[in-house]
Length: 182
Image (tube, helix red, strand yellow):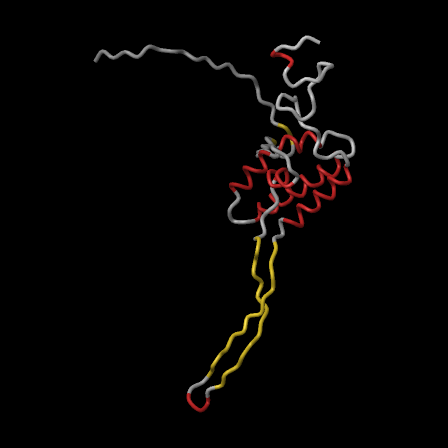
């Protein structure tokens, strides 16, 4: 085989050698749908955050003088080591090790991977849908529109249940040059 600058990164058969910088793509991250399904479930556990429970001892004094009573309370306190976060499409893609959301969508087209990915994406979409019941919905609407949702206004033009027949009308538009002479 003749070698020249166009053969860089190819094996003796002319195919791109696996793992070189000229390779048309990397090997798939997931070859087993079960492994990916497990990672998808792990993501939803991971976003719940992590915390430790520590004991907090508080001392309270009530009353004054001889009537003062001091009590000590021992109560558990949750201290977050990693705060919870909402599920997102990009968060899911990053957790799975992808460089883009598109990689996630590409896997969803493959047999065996389709159902678990669609189910995970539906969970993310469901979280956004729940956000519609809050006070701040602008960002939620934006995200849902990017997921294919649309605003739709339906107008029903009827009269006592009967449809209104609109007669065709002719509209004439005349363009007139303004006269600026006064």
